[in-house]
Image 1: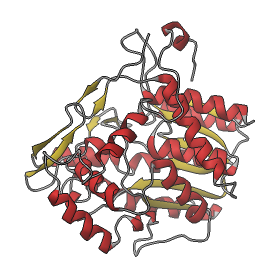
Image 2: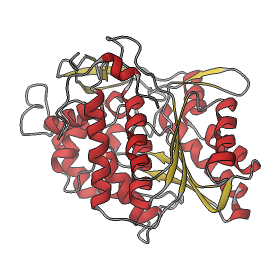
Image 3: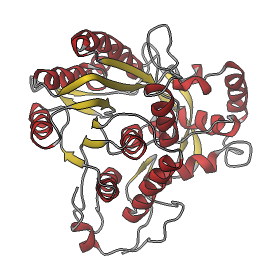
Length: 393
């Protein structure tokens, strides 16, 4: 069978498994080309199958020589028309390359929010992973969570206090369209905080510490985003931003809990990049094609995270703000650049966005790469469905 791109809006409904394999290898090769650095050695990543979570895993493993565990909720192949998610294959092929390099790469596929999953991971650390971890990365993006009491919560991308109208890009039809997003209800805001806030991050750290599996000088990080004023209504000032604000409260409590092992919890404010999550945030795709056109330091997720780890988190160039958040996003938010980006944003129209005025082609290619399409170096677009069934995470 031949891999073919299928889209619904800004969501890919198909993948090219071997294109994904090549993309993982390309990211590994990027990290290797930067050289090694002194970093973590035993890493647990919650949400490690894509985006910043996967990048954290690749940088830690192939930059610092770390053994890694990733927890993610992904789907494998079911039928010839449903061959699974990109993250399923990211997990498989990362493990393949890591084990070839002599590294441990364990994948847990299931609900990271659940107590059962937490207990499974802790048991594995105790029995098969050396007994301790020195880095926990929390990079979970989800639309739903069942909390410890069994209540189901849903997250929202809606603004708070007002309806907001703006232009967005439909990657399926390759059109710019006007979109109105209604204000979040109080219940939607509460649900977003429950799903995307820091409550589960705290729970993971608490259980790991109680089990005695945190090493001295343990670090834990959670990724956040602030972004420019153009996206504030949906992100920083919306329901999702409220959740990210709550993570800062969680970071304070985590730091108090792990101070006896000289541990540190850090919110990393990351830059805007092309991910499965970012392309569905209203207005953000149009902002990205303006930003990518004008910035001198364009970064993909692996480039951004690898720089953050080797120069900031485990380097001597850390940049913190007044709230103690690490700020590798400073390149993006430099005032002179943002003034130019805003001006270009206002010049981009439905008629010209695919021309050289903006970086639409780069944005679309990066999105396709996430799903294994148009990947540099890939030569395999045809495969047997039965072969996919033999690939195990």
